[in-house]
Length: 178
Image 1 (cartoon, rainbow, N blue to C red):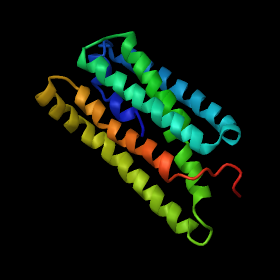
Image 2 (cartoon, rainbow, N blue to C red; image 1 turned 90 degrees about the vertical axis):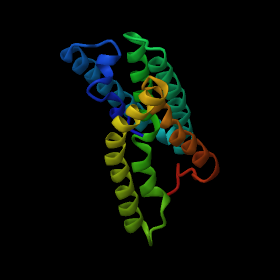
Image 3 (cartoon, rainbow, N blue to C red; image 1 turned 120 degrees about the vertical axis):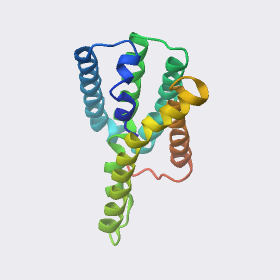
């Protein structure tokens, strides 16, 4: 799950960064940090294993989303928001960012690989389109029900919990499988 939809145009101002230039700079720092974490994941994925990184990324995302929801629930500002953004970026950069692309080329048998990767890529792209579109609507619903954006952030916990369940029950380790 990509964290960029959480960083919509008014998330940073709500988090205590009202100046557009400050918000853009903070977003840039988060993206640079995520790139660095992703590069680290690239170098350790063959040593640690895909499944372990998947689980670490999923659990870290659950923690980051839980804390992120609390930050918005209690209207915390400033560095709390940045810590959450960096945490989400680290979790994404370790697991959900690079691993699906790597694993889908390893997980499918050769006879169906091309079609399966095409289908999987299509699903990822559709979800990638859907997530930022629905997030403002989730924020509106959350604000109407809870009075904060927290519920919109906690909604994505469902997918992270499903990711952990998938990792524990179905996902095979593809490290060294060639």
